Image (cartoon, rainbow, N blue to C red):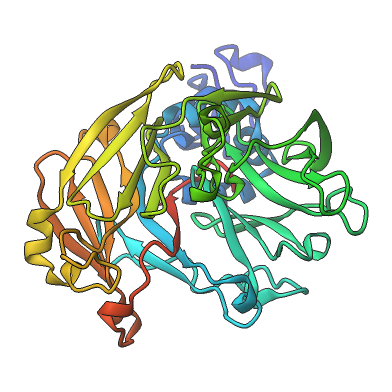
Length: 439
């Protein structure tokens, strides 16, 4: 290999001696092998691709050459291909409160480890943003592949809010620029799209009403690549009952379900179809409503989420002693039953499931809610559900039916609570995935 650090060659008579660099008598370069390797860009790239990402970030300060190499799109693309799939290792869960309490109660985020019980949260409270408007009231709106979309927004003061994207893996915080809104317009964040396997950039979608107190509105999209907002060409009247607060990013699109209450029982079923928005193409579409009680008033809680590129939905109703998890087909042709869970064995081990005040009079159902569904096929591990029972979180193995306690709110938070009065299904849940491609 010819040395690139000096001009040595076998033609010793053509080159003058340089002290400490080469021995021209033998026509050999005396540069160390380490120096030669570090100067070979292709070889250096292969080495850096094998460095843990947290350490790789610090290597940017070694030299301008290294900084340029690590930040090039080519290196980022190679790094993205070399990293393993994202793996949910914990859950962030945040209690929701009625609007009249939201200004008085701080929004604490609980950290529930899924594998290592000794794992600790990368942050304790959401005051990391130092929000000038309401730092103690920042809430997590949505999460997507390891990033958290946070906002101080309230439905009545959207124009005064601040929006943040936080990466708990790298402790990096982005503050989004203000939306181009007129004062008095209403709006809220309805979508957060980030796929590190395709791009290091993310997009945030906000729904802004054209006229105050109306339902017709526009979509505004923020791109981290440009650092600006733009108005989408789409203007629409949302279908009846669409829950924009529970959007799920899957298959390149944001998805929202429509749950119609008893007061909407006279509406046609077509209005309860799900709605999706393709983020890159900026177009809407619909998908079939899952075969669950969309118009039932007996539903205690619902779960709608994505894991390892699978979209799932389930619900907990009164008088239910089992759970059915549905999965959407990739072509949107319909839902199918993926898992069926018998709750009887769990209730025998955790009797608090049978003592809750919300149970039916004849005690034929159980106090339970679904916090999350975690698929692990990409890692050759068993997939599992995380179930909430009064004051506790249970990990239920979807392959062999085993289960265990992974979180006790009373023990973890050093508080006492009344099992009978524990409010089920009042948590917003966000998977914690180590997303290192975006600093």
